[in-house]
Length: 109
View 1 (spheres, rainbow, N blue to C red):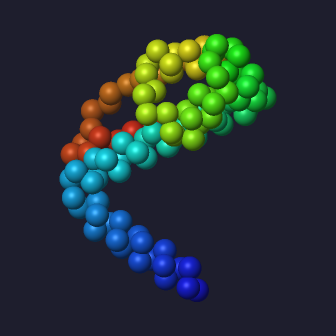
View 2 (cartoon, rainbow, N blue to C red):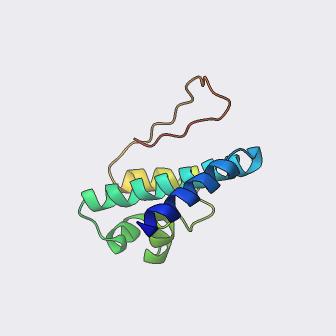
């Protein structure tokens, strides 16, 4: 019961913070980074690869793969994303559909 109260308080706090446009934008960017990191880790695991295996394919360190998958890599470039996709036997699909809200929506599929 106590955890639920704390979660409800946090949810209320977050909703209030999200009213601030700058906070909201930073929150959405971080949320997108986490979604990308999680998707990369999921695809790697579905491909039955360890981080070290993927690192060897990309000619990078295992630590670099770990940083990407944990969202700690702060400079994830398109070049790196293309190398990741190629190493995982995947394509990248980037689109910019028309938005009907003032905040862009970031989807990972």
